[in-house]
Each structure stands twice: as structure tokens, then as C-alpha cells.
Amino acid sequence: MSAFPMPMPAPARPPASPIQPGTITTDRTSMTNRTTLAQLREMDAAQAARLPVDHLALLLEEVGALKADAKHLADLLHDALHARYGDAAAAARRAEGKDTGRIRIADDSFVVVADLPKKAAWDQPRLAAAVATIVSWGEDPADYVTTEIRVPESRFAAWPPRIRAVFEPARTVATGRPSYTLEQKDAA
Image: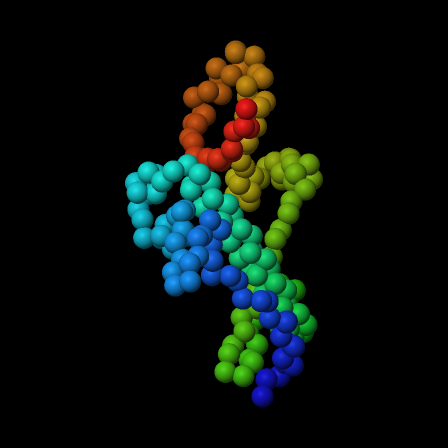
């Protein structure tokens, strides 16, 4: 028997229709005039690239809905696990004399690993003052802290050319992953 009461299951959703939008159904078969996700799974990128743009738009819409549903379900399960194990995890951490970190809780034939990560945040002006203090003591701040200088691209673009020329040798520009959105044109 579990040390934790089992919550009542949520009412079941009605089953999703196996008929995809754009599907023509006859008494014995169903045929579709669009590409399904099942068909897309069997393609490589070159084959998918040759699909009509309206099929790509519908597939993107369908994938977006699946992502949203998956996120909702993951959030729901996270909240359920927290409701079930959160108090026990907090008590176990207190018993071990810690506020954060990983602990283990037994539940039937499972071991629940509950992790509460530590997220330290540093007040930058106070940190700069602390660094100045240890410098005044004759200490090398590099022995204690790592310094990273950041330059927002919008500021760099607004600098005078003379200042930009000094910093340009330290600047590397890379690109991210390209993204594409399909928007239907207005019918004229």
C-alpha cells in the first residue's frame, strides 16, 4: 500500500475522432486530400519540402496544437507530482537540514527523486562594491569571481564609429536556427 493516497482520476475525455480535417469518408474507407502527421513521419526533410504549402501550413498548425497539448499535460503531471510529494519532500529536506537539493522518497515499488534546485541571484551593484572592497585589500578578484562583460547589440549599433572600432575585434557574430512562419495571403 502506498504511503500517499491516490487522487481520484480526472473524468475521461471523449475519444478524439480518427477522422482528420479534410477527410472524405465513405461507408468502407476514408481518403484524405491532405498530408497527415503519420505520413509526415515517414518522410525525410526533402520529401516534406516538396509538399504543397497549404499542407505544410496545416501540418505546422497541427504540430503547434500537439505541442500546446503536450505542454499542458506535462504541467498537469508536474502539478500532480508536486501535490502528491511536495510536502513529504520538504519534510525530508528539513530532516536532512537543507533547503534545496535532491532527496529520495519511497512509494510502493518506486523511489521518487525530488529535486529542488538552488538558483542564486547576485545583485550586480552590490557585487561590484564587494569586488572593489577586496581590491582595496590588495586581493585579486579573479581568485574569487568570474567577470563577464556584455554588450547589448542595440547599444553597440548606436556607438560612435571610433568606439565601435575599439570593440569590434572582440565581437563575433553567429546566427541562430532559422525560423519560418506560413501566413496566408489576404484574398484580393
